[in-house]
Length: 376
Image 1 (cartoon, one colour):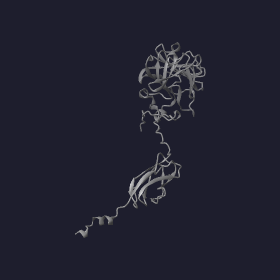
Image 2 (cartoon, rainbow, N blue to C red):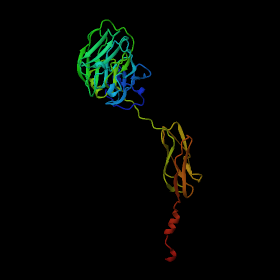
Image 3 (cartoon, helix red, strand yellow):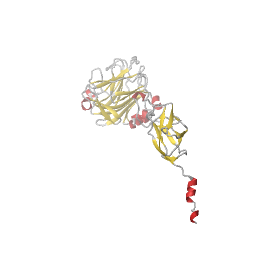
């Protein structure tokens, strides 16, 4: 059965409840970043916090939140965020990265970082992505040090002065052989390139701790622009995947039922007829509550000891039976006050006025219509 790839985006009650749908789980969605926070971390029970250096500024992007770096949308060239871990065992699988970005320029030294490992220089292993002023977009995977880095240098110029989406898809990042990766801009293939091959196996087993918008080792590779949503995957994404993400980065999430439960009941309700005949049962009065009920609540009607009778003398309401009915038989003529009380601690409903009218005498009516024999 095909998995729905583009569920309707919705609101989510709490960020830690956000979960990828079955298709994107199969693509190995491992980490998601939005604005100045992580919103999903597959392999950690609690989403890691994000700390900031400088003052990256919250911004509005095409997909809600964004974060600004650099002098135009941030406060300086050393702005960065630190947080999140790519929990990769020896980084011997595929890697795909999707990001929504806005570049004013190419950043510090012409090589501003979308992200880099928090160690900064790659000495403990790590990954990095950056656009550059030499008309390339680069993905680096450091094997054991900066001297053994595997690079995919895509011959693509990153757009500037507008929002765009970047998607890099690499089937194997070990670098022991030439593997072709694909760069997508705005959901369309922009370029493909094979990596350089770095000698030796990846020996570092250190997970990649990330900095966003710069690199931590010297703070000199600051991004100049804004970053919106960013997703990391442990599988190679297809052209269709890149197009889906470009159209709606939220397509990765399950549609959660986030309809808010109605507030619990605080009061009873009462409705019914306003008049009837003395000695005759009324039409139904209906009792209920102004919200969901926990357990069963017994409701008892009253006419302020005015002599009338109720059938039944009490009723029960619950979550499964939220309303109940009773009838009232007044004992005398006049205006009666019908009220209810309950054993559930709910505020009583506003009482109703019920006018009891005298019954019409059939014999008296016939006598009044008889002819006056004495006058005949």
